[in-house]
Length: 350
Image (cartoon, rainbow, N blue to C red; front, side, top):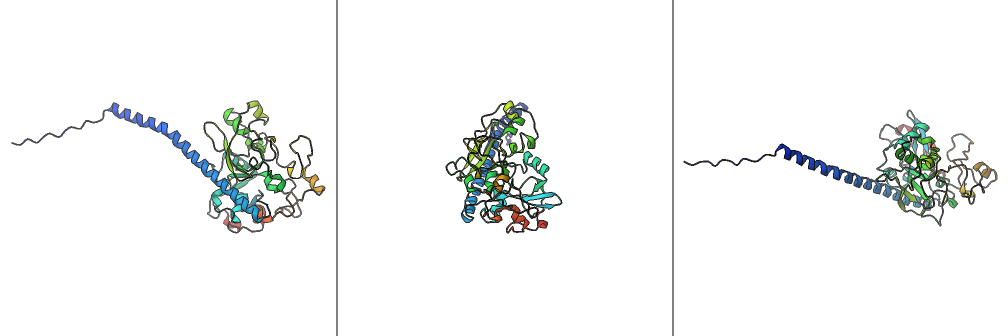
């Protein structure tokens, strides 16, 4: 009689062994996840830098074809049931074929909108959609992740420092479509010191214009496009004391990267004085004249780009050289239905 061999009994995992395996897997995940997140964040930062590099190339092409003039930040606003919706200076570059992709103006690390952008959009009543003509619900803020140096908006050639073009910022990660001050005061105060302040009132609204949306291990970093066309990741340092932050001092060395003048104050206003027609603004109290006086003296051409009211002149925002091409203004293009690739009919712009 033939006996069938008994099948071997497979040894099962004990409960303790199973728990050990689960613990090891959990430990590996906890070790690997931060690395994966860091890698993903670095990839987003790299894409953001590439976006700005492309914008820099587009601006240089715009300069070449427009007598050395670039786009202004005049907001191409129109009204619908949800309030104001805006085109921006980046949209101008796309619509005039200097920029190939309309979404090149969006940083992948931008929360669309970042909290400060949303607060400013609420305060000023501006909204945006990522893709126009697609029926998207508007969100508070503006359509680009990148802020134009406000001084570049005026387009006086003397504002671009040829000898320091590698240190002067043209555009940067932003919490609006323009910026003036180079600091991270509000972030330090609210995150590192736990002293929340309303972003639009600390130390004034210009103190929260740069979008420090990159960085690791507690660093605040921002991608910056410089006047000479290179892109660099800047880190806000050294960290100021809470007392310095309360009064808007400390936190970024404007000798190594600046917007208006080397060594400028970090919370300067954008419109009360103007370097384009005044030498040595950086010397406190010397040669400082507001726009109205300059225009009255005939030293600056007041050119209203897309006047909101007949005959009105906004001296703070719209002083341009007399031969400035109006089509480089988003507001001018909106008011004259001059957009070519982007929708010009407000009914198409939900």
